[in-house]
Amino acid sequence: GSKGTRGQMTDFETQSLAIARVALSVAWWADVVAACALVAVILGGIVAFRTLKVIIAQLDSARWNSLLSFEQDMASRRTKFHEIAAQMQTDAPTLLLRAVHLEAKESYFNSLDRLASSILNGQFPDREMKQDYHEAITAVVRAFPEDFTTGTHYRKVVKLYNRWQDAT
Image (cartoon, rainbow, N blue to C red; front, side):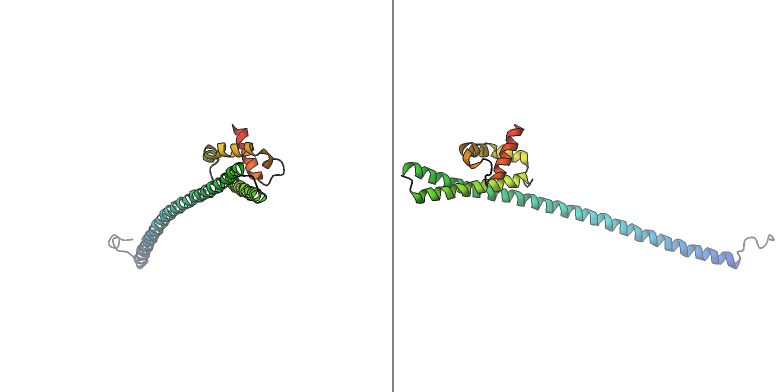
């Protein structure tokens, strides 16, 4: 080329430069959209994580509320059983009183079996439950050995009792 046309661009170069500017603009807007999407994903993840934490806390609270319900149920059944047992010692046990006593004992032992089943299934932490219930379950199994032998209806109590005995 000659020295005079050196500073001027051809139509092809002008069009190429215009296309490059448009491509740069499109790429820049694509980066902006990608950055917005990334921010949205991060915020969504934060919201999901916080929601999950709330749900886990609610489930944990519900689990401990169900334990409280178990405890209240067991306590009332144990109280009824002991009241009837005390009445049998002071009065001459009639056939009806014996039947009521047997029913109260079965009701109490069934509540223990449900609690033992929940502990064995991992609904409550074994270590904490052992601290709270080891002595109570041991006392019941030892006080009523005939009710906790092979073939018993209270297999979960026996299983938990044996596991806790093996662990000590």
